[in-house]
Amino acid sequence: MVERLLANEVRLQGRSVVSLKDWSPTEIKQVLMTAKWMKANPKVAEIQYALKGKSVAMIFELPSTRTRVSFQVAIQSLGAAPVILDWQDSQLGRGEPIEDTARVLSRYVEALVVRARNHQMVQTLQKWATIPVFNALTDAAHPFQVLADALTIWEHVGYLSGAKLAYVGDGNNMANSYMIIGAKLGMHVRVACPVEWSPAADVVAYAQQEAEMTGGSIQVMTDPEQAVFGAEAVATDVFVSMGNEDSDAKRSQLAPYQVNAQLMAKAKPTAIFLHCLPAHRGEEVTEEVLEGRQSVVFDEAENRLHVQKSVLYHTLSEF
Ligand code: CP
Ligand code: NVA
Image 1 (cartoon, rainbow, N blue to C red):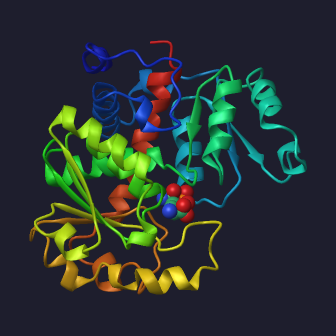
Image 2: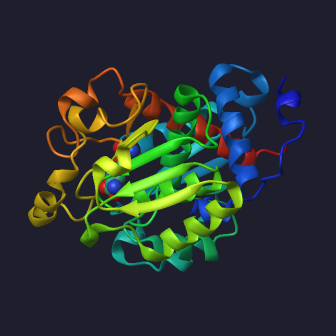
């Protein structure tokens, strides 16, 4: 069964996931197909022992519940050992250069999972490491989250190419990553943000260029209703990301971008609601929408585990 699943696979051994910019549409689709298969077949022995004898280090500079637990469980469920470093208790917290940390850890473990404030830090880590580096969130990107979201859209909407996704709120790491994965998968992505909180112009330009090759489209606008109109999936994220918690002015500028029942009514009646969590009820989303019939946020959270297992398997197994 495993052989059949992987018969036509693309080879991904040794690859990092710092941004999905580095991954082709075919590679992303392969990861999603394997994730779907692994979700349906969690107990297949070849999968359970695929990474036996290997170790994966996890370093978090910022708090995490889903990413930390789902990566740890994903690593263990493939037979590998997670090695969890506390940022402050490691020498990183005392200023040891990331270049040195990358080279040292590469001598001990087979991969690094890193959550960092600054995207450049993860890029530097990748440059100096001789093993795959997996971005567990930076200020610029959250690639594993949008892989999970794509799997969730595939499961609930039924297809990815041509699917209409609206993202409403802060033009942050999630907005960037939705545009990139949407472009790669031929989706129509509309992002609605206030001008001051628009996503990075270089990411928008990159995603628009990619979308031209896949039949998708990327539009950035200020009107949330226009973005959500006819959408099959509506997503939002916190108004203020980790590390910037004090920004009350930003919260009030983003208040008109709340996803509530009135806004959801502009989407397709069958539209799903996505949020990477943690959510602030009454801020970027109402309790009614988050807990309502269209919300698939807990399937989305679960899918973190399956896409991470898939990426770990493809990049680290000897298959
Ligand atoms: N969605 C997400 O990355 O959650 P955590 O911050 O809990 O890992
Ligand atoms: N944009 C949020 C996502 C949290 C999972 C943040 O960076 O804090």
